[in-house]
Length: 577
Image (spheres, rainbow, N blue to C red):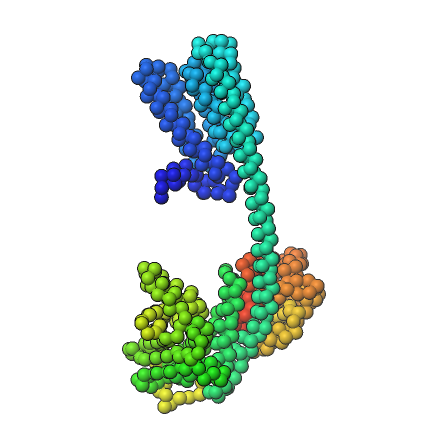
């Protein structure tokens, strides 16, 4: 930080006291600078007057010194710029006039008075500054041009008088021109800001629309896959469904990244822990790339022989990791033949928990130079890992690995680039005694509270026929009675003629959307002193959508795609409340 930056920092007001977006924030810095400069001058004048024995001037200067300090303290504590600036202007102007009227200013000193507009107009702005400058000019001109009228002993020369007027007028005009240019520039910037806001809003609306269009069919994929997963499938069928589920989950993450979602309910993948064959899981994932008919792709897979047992965990998440890793490696490798080596070995085993080290390497990566640069510039291991993850787009895989308790580490050698991660699994059944994958049932509903979900009367407000079928199919085992309304108006009609224990509300619908419908329902309930829980089920998942739903009177919010267990849990929570 240089000397000027230190001065600016000293003169700044804390944003807690005066908002940095306030028009007076930067002017307060000028006020503080003038105040500190005035304190220094007053201190010097006081010392000189003490040596001269002029104690009247010393007392006046000391009083003004104290008042300026108080003004600075009050400004910093309360952030009231207008009061502080007016106090400084009046005190500073009166002090200068007092010096002039008492004959303490020589002929040369009048040039300093001509700079008064530069101080006041910059601080107070054009309107207040011009008024203050003109009042000061009239009073100071009386003392300079007709000092005898005030009994001043100093006679000012004609040249000094002319120079004073010319300098004052020139400074006054220059500061007004400067303020006009500044205001014009501010106006132009304001127009640009409004234009940028409009463009940003258009982009956000486009992203919201695309997000909504993608999320609705994507939610159907998630829900149907989960339902199929509950069937009694053979090993091959189970593997295919796991692959679809892993790919769908990765697509969900991609949609979330595009929309830059925050503070909303995202897809929380359930851990489908089960006994699974690690080698089969990895090979079936690799086959998704080799089945495309390319003879240039090779995936040498080595698994240590001491992993002669199944692992108990979630094979879907393992597939998600390798789908993301392999896809981005292939996307970022050179043309021609591509080889991705996968080496898996057991590091340790204790208390039926085994540590598995996954090592993936390739010699064909195009980003070797960028990775080398990262290694040379990033000082910390964490910084290097984060930079490489961002460069190679391993964000999805990294998040899943972290959720499983592991971390990705990278290493660049002269002949290849490799990365590894360590995961812990519960030791499963021996491979020789492989059993069919157990059926993945939906969680058993445990009746709690006033209303059992199975006995609840549910109203589903949804305009899309496919989505209606998906939700009905998903809730088939958990809920007996579900009525359907195709839009908000129909929902209001049904709400007025029947009693519902909970409402599942879509947001974007024709005739009447979910926000308006919820407000009308809440308005109707005021007369009956009742309250029906409403859960928003929406493909809107951008920042602010959740807050808008809750503000309209909804009790909870879930964004598509979602796991059916998440919806059921939210329904149970609302019924229990």
